[in-house]
Image 1 (cartoon, rainbow, N blue to C red):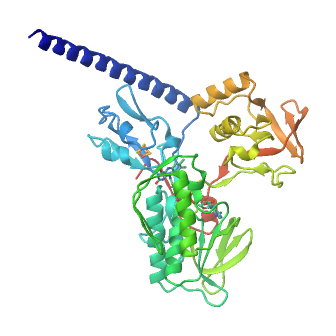
Image 2 (cartoon, rainbow, N blue to C red; image 1 turned 135 degrees about the vertical axis):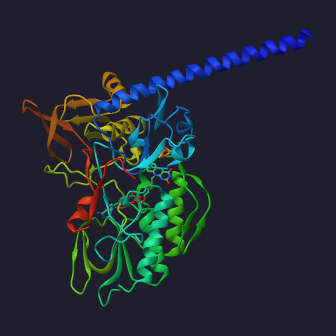
Image 3 (tube, rainbow, N blue to C red; image 1 turned 180 degrees about the vertical axis):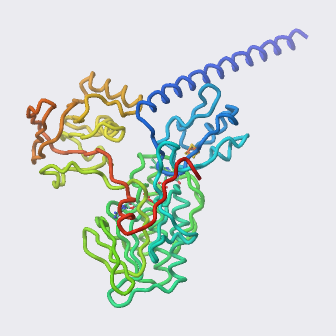
Amino acid sequence: MSSTWIALGFLVAFAWILSLFLQKREQLRTETGRRDLEALSAMGDIVPASIHPLIDPLRCIGSGACVYACPEKSVLTVVNGRGVLTNPLGCIGHGACASACPVQAISLVFGTAKRGLELPEVDPDFQTNQPGIYIVGELGGMGLIRNAVSQGRQAADHIVAGDRRGAGESLDAVVVGAGPAGTSATLRLMEAGLRVLLLEREAFGGTITHYPRAKVVMTGALDFPMYGRVSKRKMSKEQLVTLWEDIRDKTGLQVAVGELVQHIERGPDDSWLVSSSGGVFKTANVLLALGRRGSPRKLDVPGEEQSKVVYRVIEPEAFQGQHVLVVGGGNAAVESAFALIDGGKCASVTISYRKNTFARCRQPNRKRIEAEIEGGRLTALLGTEIEEIFQDRVSLRNASREPISIDNDAVVVQVGGTAPTDLLQNVGIEIVTKYGEA
Ligand SMILES: Cc1cc2nc3c(=O)[nH]c(=O)nc-3n(C[C@H](O)[C@H](O)[C@H](O)COP(=O)(O)OP(=O)(O)OC[C@H]3O[C@@H](n4cnc5c(N)ncnc54)[C@H](O)[C@@H]3O)c2cc1C
Ligand code: SF4
């Protein structure tokens, strides 16, 4: 009898400790969420790049199901008993939150009520109002690798079934962007025997090549024309990059890397002329799979054309032993500076920002950058602008127009970018602006 009471006592004590632990955990999460919200309001109205959750506060019961369902983690938080999108830039549109909500308080939308998101209008076959020009993947607003692969294939199916074909020097199709959408579309066009050219400004694989190292990637099953089905739903970034290399090796897919498409215009005989950094290509169809990252904005200063100037840090080790200058003061710039401090073994890391504070950064980034400056691992040149980039140094000016010169081996420019929609508007593609709508 007494042993039963002891067991019962242990059970009650355990339940009590567990409930204290859960309460404490919830308090900490709410605190973090509140801080994230404060940091968010300091950054203005942030719009996620693609589809994202809109939570109805009147319906939400604060179950937290969305928080646990989101594979990206730290995107949603329960604050004051209501789910909140505390890290909009971390949301990549899985939509798992909406399916998990027990009271259907979440709808998936584009843009926000205050700040619209520009999206191209396409028909169910992904063709725009310009005959022969198609838009697939994230550029059309729908994120995720699985959607991009599927849309690329569907648009290519429509081209194959249609009668727009090149003749003589004109190609049947030019695909722009070698991410999941462009890769899948090109494979389908090759499979059908069409003459197709795949142009890519950066790296074969698209955005996946820019994921953080060892990132766990969640995808549905992927069906690649000419290659087959990939059923593994969870992969690391490195496995995904290897998959892309395997696709290229096994299918003989050719990709012209380093080709930035700058302009598209109508050509003769109902054709399109696609101008890239490598030439002008005449084609019957154009399939745009540009993603939504846009093109990095440049500084437009003398010396920027040198190969030591880059617009993104992919492998921090590549900067070993170098004096590196990061230009910019947003999250991307400060996170690049952290990557260089952590893994670059650089001779020095300096950040130049034209404003006097890092007010546009998320709070954890702001805290860390202040600590790095304080600890001497990072030099900040606030209120400065770049004047000229030389082979072994950079000259800057401060707010009082006084010159500053620093030793330099590499410059990382992260001062925002131009929207990919500019290219579309110039060719007359209809664009709609969505304000927090589906
Ligand atoms: C950090 C992060 C994590 C993610 N995690 C996941 C995940 O776990 N699961 C998932 O399914 N999705 C994830 N996504 C989303 C997924 O990566 C994208 O939805 C997908 O890559 C979109 O494919 P896409 O082919 O439309 O575009 P992208 O992959 O962006 O490819 C577009 C390509 O076009 C090229 N390009 C652009 N403009 C031009 C031009 N003018 N000329 C020539 N080339 C050009 C670009 O260089 C790029 O290579 C994540 C995204 C990010 C940023
Ligand atoms: S849409 Fe996706 S990434 Fe965004 S919060 Fe929901 S589950 Fe997370």
